Image (cartoon, rainbow, N blue to C red; front, side, top):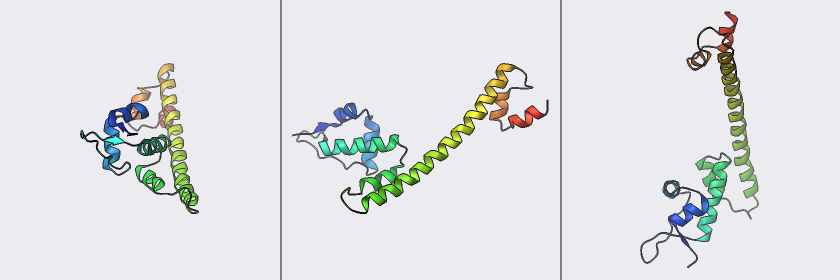
Length: 141
């Protein structure tokens, strides 16, 4: 028969059952055929498709981008150009997130260092969270 059940698919891929159901609902995975006893049976091709989706999610691709990538045929001449455009947009988004995370890290590191040094008036962590500028607080001292 060559297929596996949903619970086996979840174990094999490390993807939880709710996520698999969601991917079916939004069209990333087609609903699999049912066996004679009513269980959904996932073919090796569906397993590969889910693994593709999971790898794409790990790389930060949005669901719409993954749908577009799944719709590309690797042997078609324009497929690589289309995939390149989608990946380039995702790369820009990842770089933007990295920049945002670096800013967040700098603010948190500064607030933690100020808190540990106790050379700061008020709580630097609470001030950082309330929107008070750490630099503005430092210049007031």
